[in-house]
Length: 203
Image 1 (tube, rainbow, N blue to C red):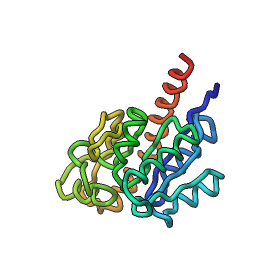
Image 2: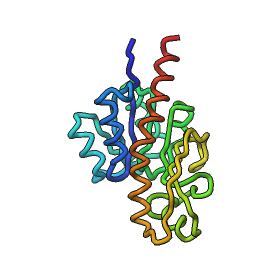
Image 3: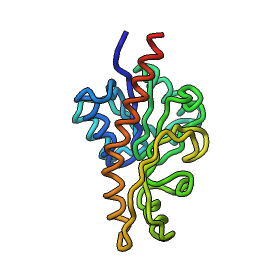
C-alpha cells in the first residue's frame, strides 16, 4: 500500500504552481507524486516542466473527439489508468467536465488568484482578477484555494491568505505579490489533502 498520493495537475499556461507542486513532492513536503499533467493547450509551458521532470503529459482537446462524452470518457480512462487520487488545477482555464467532478468529488482542488467569492466566476482569471481588484480600489487581495464543483470558483473554500494592495499597484505588480503566496499556500493545502487521502486509504 503506497504512502504517497498520486496527483494529476491540470494546466493551461506556464505552470509555475505545477513546478511548486513537483518540487514539494520531490523534497518530501507533499507525501505524493505528480503522475500526469493535463493541458488543453499543446504549447503550454507547463507541459515542458512536466516533461523535464519525467512526468507523463496529455494534451486534451474536446474538439478532437466526436462528442463531449467521448472526450470525458477518454480523460477519465487516462486518470484511472494511473490510479490518480487527487486532481490539482494550476491555472487551468477550462471548466472541468461534470463526469470528472462526479468521479473525483471532493478530490479536485483549484487555486484562484483573488479572494472568493468577490473576485471569481467566468472570465475571472489571471490579470483580469488583479485589474478588477485595483479597479474596485480594494486594499487587499489574496489567494483562495477551494474544492471544485460544477460552478466556476464555487466549491468549498479550504484556505484564504490575504495580500495587501498598494495604492500605486499595476495589475502585474499585484500579480507578482499574489503569485509568491500561491507558491507557498498551494503546496501546504495539497499536503493536507494528500495526508488525508493516505489516511483514508489505510482505514
